[in-house]
Length: 377
Image 1 (cartoon, rainbow, N blue to C red):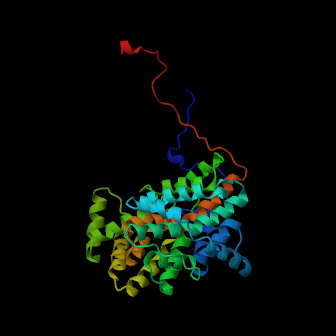
Image 2: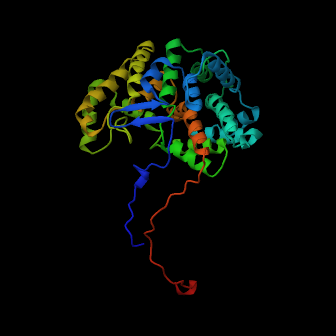
Image 3: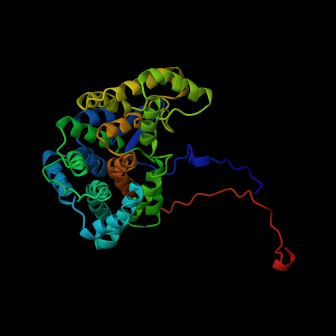
């Protein structure tokens, strides 16, 4: 090939499609869902409202929200056969078990094979409601307990904590989980959403696309940041150790987990809503030291903010999960709970005017050569 070809590794800076779902301004640190600032949504909305907004394009009326919420609550239960599948592979990593469980759901539901937009919306609601149930069921089964049945009287976030812990959460704890889901609900053509679009591009069904998304999210370069932050916090141990920790990391040219983002040069706009939540939950749980360690790291990293190394949303999420006593290997599955409506609408958008996503690679292997018989090699 003689002409010059520009390679955009990782497709960085390449626009492959138009989208009316989320708008990200990395330079200014802004995130918008369907025209609404993430700050307004995190402050005023519920996760159920944000799900409706992302999927249908507008905020719901009271009646629309009630009908939508009732559907979500009605879809929470999962078949006993799926629980048997989870039991059979309960010793696996939660992301592997979740992916397998979603595949099992597809195999047991003939409606999962339908690929029209109406089917994508309905199956998307089912999966959004069922994913928390699958994760909580696995956590119970691998610890020798019976799964806690969903409680239809609770919100999406409160029900998640109820199924996971077997006790009703406080109003503040449920609201913080709700905000966490809102902040993770949608984020443009991130790796897992793009992967789901590639799957839909082949005219596959929604369950298949969500399995693809889950497989992609499981990679530590995408969904593992919250877990890595918590490991860092444990390593630092005390707030007074943070400055030396950061200094050593920077001296060795190593990344400080929870800082920097592929998109944002300014502070991740989602981070501020987690920051105050961590402080309040730490006080409620009698463990304010985690928040103090985080803030000491933020202070130590201030000199590097001019290089785009600002705090991101996952910097605070891990500590929230830690305060709830949630095992670290559940942090990425929790990310998946929040991202479900984003994956669903990305798949629906891809389906409209669908096209096979088939980029090119520039060959740089050997020139054409002659076949050599095995006896002459």
